[in-house]
Image 1 (spheres, rainbow, N blue to C red):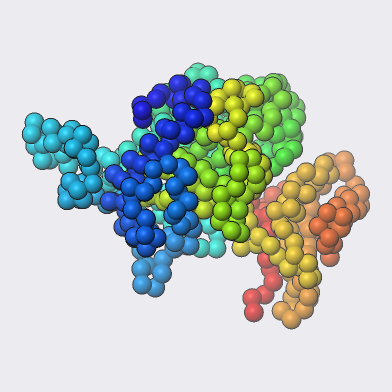
Image 2 (tube, rainbow, N blue to C red):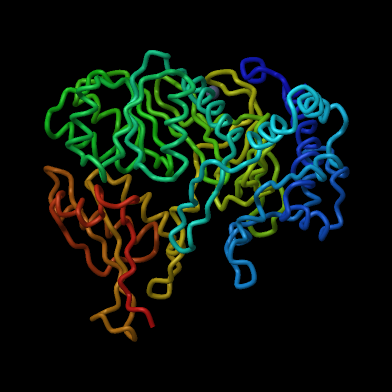
Length: 496
Ligand SMILES: [Zn+2]
């Protein structure tokens, strides 16, 4: 049952996919999670749930949710992340595994000796690679992969390429920053698994935009892959310089939310560089999942939703206030449960990512796949951290809404929002400052009036100042080529 090929799995009816998930979940809890995870054994015991009681996806509701906070160090346990690593030993394996699962190990022991068995176990469980969570407020938490988990990155890499229908002879320019973060490595391992030609430039921080653009043009890349803000910046520059990027057929965006309207802007910029009929895809992944999911292609670059892998993970959508699971298609927070994970393992894990339109099980109207899909209208928790909701002049302002508003305005090329105290006096009132670089040919006065109007009507707060900068100075201000993430929100209020 667990051996459906990906090709077959994507066409199975929902009932069969659910049966597959029930089966894999039962086995995962009994044979991996409960016996080998110090953290989750404790969670089960404290909740009074026996591993045998988890027989189906619905039974997950018996267990408490995990949160990012669980992974953070405490005074008693400065290395708490270690308790999330699966840690089998000969005794726990003997007790937890049924004979059929133990037989291959016993056979290896008889025929090749104990050392060969140790090697097999090491391949499954021993940490050999790590990435970090990218939170801004908390210490980064390390996430470990075993060789088997790395193999999984190959599997999900192959599936990403399949969902996006990228031909095997494509040349890929990967402009994600070199970093111990999932996005870069998922692309790297996808290339390894599919024998595609991948050039990883390391992004603007390593070679600068002009270096990146020269490399992309020289490679005659078919596909450009990176963070939405940086890809947009690169293409705007290419269009400005009249660069020939006519070889590009697709753009893949990852690591952050893909704002509505961005796909169309990218298509326009590429058309100015000679590239026509370009596909633009959003992808979704996060450190703790150690895998990523993609949209499928459509002629008009629709937001098709992220196509999931039912044999590798279960997603639930919950009401973030009550923690209750909501029905299909309803808004809520994504909760992740892996089905094959080794090394660092979370379970029923609150991602903090909010999805409008939830989880869907109807066949994809574009590609016909029957695997569940997460709506593309997703707000990443990482983009909200620290500055999620701010009280500005007594009004609660959602900065994500500000980002959407400014990102969609046609007069606005780049922007930054700064919070200051009036006259830098900690006792004074808050001031909201919008820094803008306007699009060529747009009058600053018009842009200011439109921004003020949009803030007033949609956010019920007015910026105290709108300040203008040239595009180059603005790019330096937001750290386009020097920072891992663009600085879109700056809190300059003195700390009290
Ligand atoms: Zn599809």
